[in-house]
Amino acid sequence: MDSSHANGFKGDDLYSHLEGCGHIEVVVRKDLAGLLIKTLDKASTLNAPLIYKLEEKLNLLRTRDSYLIPKLALATPRLVTGFFINSRNVEEVENAIYPELQKILSQIENAKNLPEKFQYIHIRRGDYVTNDFAYGLLGTDHYTRFISKDLPLIVGTDDVSSAASLIEDLKPDLVFSSKNSTAWQAIKMMAMADSLVLANSTLSWWGGFLASNRGKIVYSPSPFYKDDFKNDELLQYKKFTKVNSEFL
Image 1 (cartoon, rainbow, N blue to C red):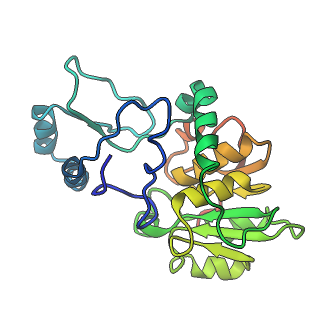
Image 2: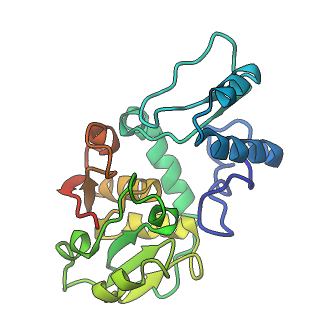
């Protein structure tokens, strides 16, 4: 793990509670490796053959398709990196993953002023604002159709400033961001919600995974990403309720 390549809530470490997981043997902090990955991330956007050759020479394996397991080379790679999400792989081992996550969440302190019952809406903005052509920004209409007047409404977001107009439209009872909660608390709130509307983000996905395993209703955008109609099934967990995406 590393701090140079973190993409979670600012100042928060999603790896911080994984040491106790029975399926992890060694956790090592390597910030220099993180810096290398970060550099490769930026360089790979150029799609330059020279970068690919460099990765090959250094025996680095970088995923090019975020939905398919990469084919490993004959020689064991020195580093495997890249964005990856595929719900089918989680489903194959969920009987092991779910109890581990439950154990971690039992150690996480609840966010302040959290009501006993509530509905939760997750809004993903941040770098999605500049990459909306790929991921897509979910608008007000995506969320309002699932709001219940019988439950307090909680909004969680990575970027209050970019989501300001949407938050104003939704009129939530509470708003949580990195200023008043951690990433683990965000996941725990989603897991505890009686009704959950996901954003098209991996943090949302895991919150939905936990909530749906508690028998709660989880609404997931479909397609998950704006430009990934054909890969949507790989991003949908079997217990999600798929709803048509309402992109801005």
